[in-house]
Length: 342
Image 1 (cartoon, helix red, strand yellow):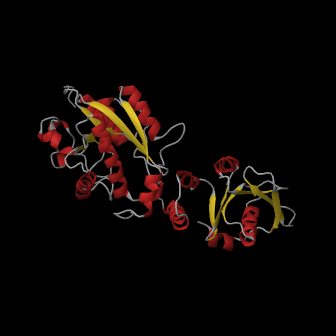
Image 2 (tube, one colour):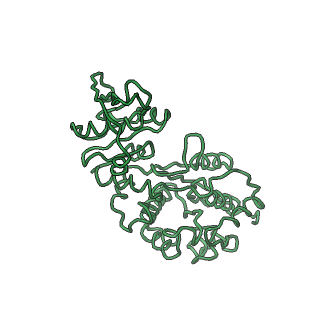
Image 3 (cartoon, helix red, strand yellow):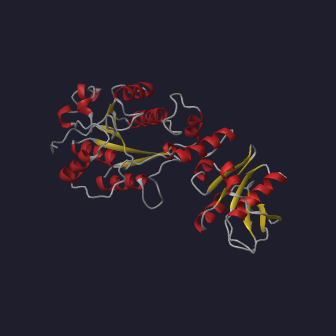
């Protein structure tokens, strides 16, 4: 890459913190552009943790390069879109095209707000089957009102010239022509031309593409008329069981998850846990009938330490309330668990 500097044209960069978007950002800065980076996340990002992950990488890169990073969280609006995406789902519950359109629409708003000329992304032609085929990339731009204003530095020479290229703001010859799912070329350029040694999250990820997790989000959408962000985040934790149309149970798998569930439980939720032996904490959510209570107790007992063969006494109460009850529960058998597991 050339060290030639361009005039400080302001642009918006979509920076996930993964390898591709990081490389695209370094390329655009080296070409002299004034970058405002946008980091988008949702309740379903797999590469985001409190101590590491793509959001943290985006902020770290912003500090390193002196780039301002704006973090945009897609919450309730994203869940509303997820219920019925215009362009459907991928192999799981992943609405990749609608997700990309939502991101681009918000990026356009920020582009106008910031007085920027265009946006750029780390997208690579042919890398993702739903959203990074050439015809679909063009369609997504059109739906977002960004036709000709999305620059993809890693694949630009393989794509139709954008408005910034036609207007001479970008030298097309400074762009790359990477195609496909392999990241060997990106890694080579990152190391050879930018000296990058960071342990980057290669591509981020989305839980909605996971078949097991897709079942949980489908259950949430089917049985909850207005799920919130907290409901979506709860899907990441524990074992999930559909007890009835009006109730479900989430059972902690270890001490850390027990603590997480206790913190995440809502004021209307019931907490179930064994009284006399070690075992899980479980959140009961929904209408507590006698049948659903007994079933919740049985499932909680199944994951408790074995007693002397007698039923296990399971205590339950509403979160933050002193009044409590108990039920003697026989551990659920595997056939039952398989039938109600989400």
